[in-house]
Image 1 (cartoon, protein in one colour):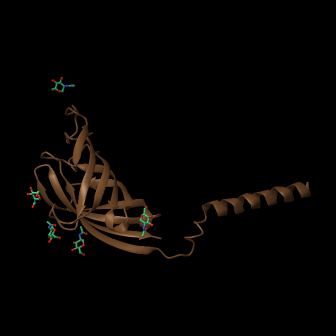
Image 2: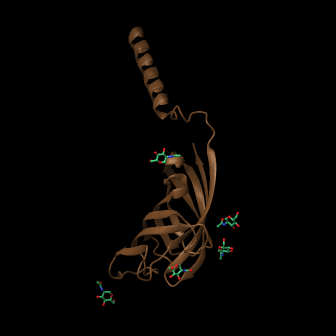
Image 3: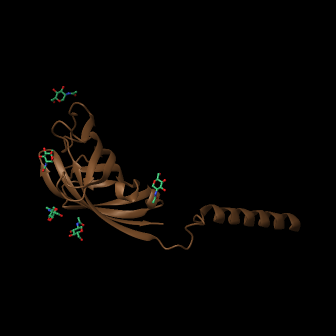
Length: 181
Ligand SMILES: *[C@@H]1O[C@H](CO)[C@@H](O)[C@H](O)[C@H]1NC(C)=O
Ligand SMILES: *[C@@H]1O[C@H](CO)[C@@H](O)[C@H](O)[C@H]1NC(C)=O
Ligand SMILES: *[C@@H]1O[C@H](CO)[C@@H](O)[C@H](O)[C@H]1NC(C)=O
Ligand SMILES: *[C@@H]1O[C@H](CO)[C@@H](O)[C@H](O)[C@H]1NC(C)=O
Ligand SMILES: *[C@@H]1O[C@H](CO)[C@@H](O)[C@H](O)[C@H]1NC(C)=O
């Protein structure tokens, strides 16, 4: 009986050790302080004209529903240009590709965004954002949920501020802070 309980204990210890190994950080990262990269760029969300970079893919007809936001349920796919200044013809630094949807019934007009930002000057490294975007707020904050290349294992946050609008089009200024290894 005593021997059995000792072996149960040692197998418990084994599993605790195994768990500790499974949840411990990658050896290359353990104990290494993260690098911090701060970026600033402008995203061009262009819906109008002959060459839109963001298109509504659903629904094709307005929905009938009782909420305050008639755009509720709209889903968009974007491949937006990122430039160094608010001028769309300024130097291209990358692209924001992904999906966003109008996800609020109410007047706050918040989108849910799932976008990956790829940056040429970082050898096409990317970081991904998933989050709520209350587009009418002057400044919005989004969490960063990982990255690739230089930004592998990234965490961080972005602040976005609409720089200008023209009909359905918008230029959005981004300040990004990335912690990566
Ligand atoms: C939408 O609402 C209008 C007005 O209430 C109604 O005439 C129409 O049939 C509804 N359409 C659908 C698809 O429910
Ligand atoms: C950007 O360049 C295009 C093509 O040369 C031109 O049609 C457009 O007016 C320019 N836009 C701005 C904001 O300068
Ligand atoms: C950039 O990407 C290329 C192709 O993936 C790779 O061969 C090269 O090592 C990368 N350079 C840097 C500095 O990461
Ligand atoms: C972005 O950073 C610039 C320069 O530090 C600052 O002037 C601007 O207010 C910031 N914008 C946002 C939306 O955080
Ligand atoms: C738009 O961006 C320019 C260049 O960074 C900046 O000077 C200006 O204050 C911004 N405007 C708004 C409304 O954020």
